[in-house]
Amino acid sequence: MLSMVLNISISPEAEARLRTLARTEGLDVNTFAARELERWIARPSLEEVLAPLRAEVAASGLSDDELTELLEEAKHEARAERRAEREP
Image (cartoon, rainbow, N blue to C red):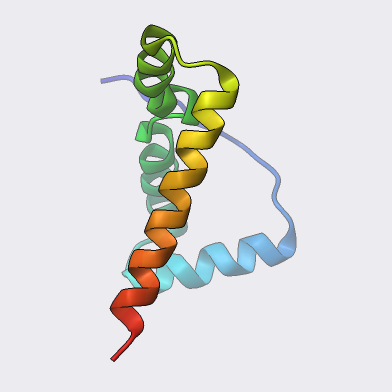
């Protein structure tokens, strides 16, 4: 397996934080940084996450105003549910 070697510049504050986090995990800085970078890269982008929703909205035929109203209603319902859960 081939691997890429990166040489990047980061601020002294970021370096200190990186070293602290690596030490906390019991890893050397390079191993920790590579692991975290690979985790970050593996996460889907916002565009990838939203693509199915955007496709459903487009297929639904809802107008922008109808979609906005639907989302506003859902937001208010969710807030009401959270308030009800907090009440004794």
